[in-house]
Image (cartoon, rainbow, N blue to C red; front, side):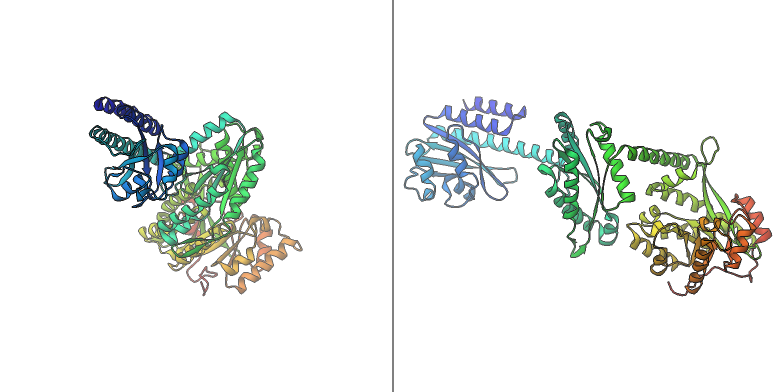
Length: 608
């Protein structure tokens, strides 16, 4: 009979039947083999508390009453057996001191005696108890001893199998770092939400995570992610928060009007991040950026929901860092264009269709060349240069921008070396960089390594940075990286000056050696024009701050004369030379490069 019981239960375990069903079957089979007895199976959790798993012949109220009790030397037979790690019998519950606090639960329902045995896991820990209750005052007989021995072993097998399955399930469907449901859980939940109908999706990106990793180490970044995940989960409807990976979380928003609820949840998440997060005893101000989309709104379907929310998040990171953007149809079209622009540039990188062109920077009084600006030309498979709009859209992608800069540096450095080897009195080459280059975190090392490999001192390099780079979320990181580069001898130019915001503030707070006045001001130059007053004022300010001014986009003699009259000494534009390849620019440098003792020269400010 015991062999039959064993075969039945082992088959249930092998077939993966639910644990509660298997435990119930063990109890019923054991009760059928012994007269006037009632079986229960309890589990012991990690905190040492009892939880009812099965007791088919015992009233549910009794099972509920003992659930949650902490094991101990006098906590009935089951609590004592788990605590003592050995079988415990009470032949008379009415008088046994183990039952002083619990006999009022057992006696009214006819439970007069009890015998409980601990169930051990493979590591030797107590994971549960198996108990016989009797409707008469007695202890176990020889037959029941064999039954209990068999049932305890079967319970151990079933509980261990369930624990393994639970661990595997947790590994498969939960994030190990934050303990939130992971991407696999999110995919399943999304399918379930589709079946219900109306729902929305918020994607949450953690701002400045890379900066935290760089300054506090990845352990500090992990601590930040754990706390961010906890706060997001607290704001999520019905706890439907997920970690998709890296710095990205997701929140499913169910309900008949998800668009309205999405705004409420996004606001709650932003509010939850107001309090700084402590990482390794450091207080870290933390913000998140949120993008969202709702099924049914702006032609969003369940199938396009994730992509639409991605578009919204990407747009929010570019334009509204730390805020919330909801998807709209126009946004989708813009993001699609961005995607295709990035694809064009990446294809050109892979196919070797990226070329360096150089435009001379000249003295406005003599037209002598003092340096060049390196420009990136990207060609289509048909040999046509891609338009500037696609180029700028692609640069918004940090990885693409970083790859482009790497390619340009590897072309520029040997060209500069060739000019130096020829003895050309060459002063500098301007190299354009973007926010993506700084976000990579190793710009100074990459730039220094490439130029040093070709024997080009960094005093010949000007880093050209736009105001928008300074205004990004990583402004502190940008300032630190530029400080490190200037310490190596490199100069810094603020490019397209006047097209961004708070330019004068940047002159005070960030290290700048050269100001390049945007071509839009130069194009509007004529005597008495407002542009002339602005340019003249900027030149005067730069001179007092010890900075050099270069006017961009000089296309006519009239513009050159006006700039000279305003005190500007350097410029570049089609009036002097169009961008050319290495051969063409080398000819210009041979003919018109400024002699060593000429003036003006570009030099670093006396103070960093």
